[in-house]
Image 1: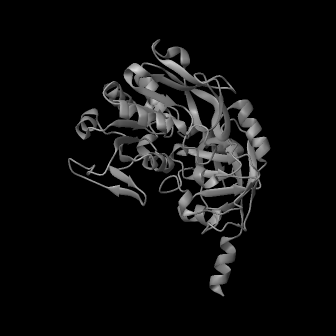
Image 2: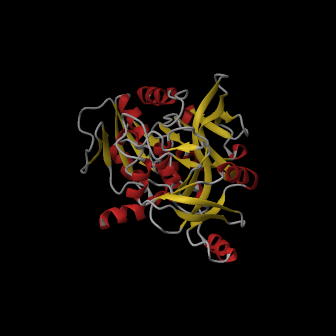
Image 3: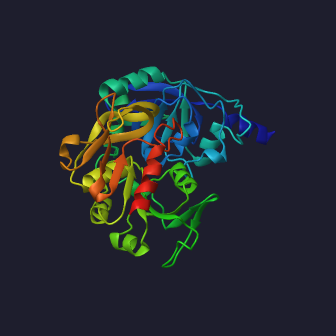
Length: 386
């Protein structure tokens, strides 16, 4: 009887308040996670599905995610859809949580998934109003409070005093602690001077700035042997490994704060073929001498149109970033290959002489369309020609 009462109490929803740093606030009900206050940058994602991939994408470290699609949780969660070893978002906001999931692949509910990770989930929020406010005012710091009896001025002050993500190195919170080879069964940790072994076609060193598993799966499918290394790995260590190519991964936060990575990439340019995605694209552009800036509310979703300037066609892309590269700051010999059709921001570059290229969006999708998967084949071709 005591056990039954305990479970009933656990399922009682807690009222909470979502407070933004400008004083705007929204009410909701907690459906998952511990009874604790949560801080982070409040952003939104326009994907209709793929919430598990979004939750486990390390690029969302330090952020509170709001889903624009109203019904979330209807297909549960499954181990095959993980994009990293765990959840990285600070909290998760939805219009309506679907308690009863239906999916033959699923082995748990979204609530179980969040509970086990200790991540707060909020429902019953007017997400349309919240997203509209962010679109007008911009992404900003926010918090979820469960004690609504405190003065609003006190809550606003706490949000304002929180750290946010600008000028902070978020990569150090998500990068791997030691190198590993990616296998069909996941990471295999390695050591020694020759971690490669003999069974490979192309050897790729992938900097882990917050890498998504699907990037590694796609490189593996193209017969690459991928060694994932910590973000702080030095140029000298990379040269000793003698890879066929270097991959710069996605990741969270402000690229200009990851100074050690920028310096290492500068030294690697011209030595190996380089391919960068998302944060990796931004870090590569900074290493080339470019500058980055913070977008008003970022690009997050599985439906962003990008024009390929070299082919003249439009790709529908998956995106997740809050910063962008200033096109005018790039060296003159850098070719701009892709632009965003929503706001004309930079989406891709290349420099054949330096054997490098990068894109701001996610060609590995997950979730999202597969229009840009060809970019991985370009990396293979570049390595084969070197």
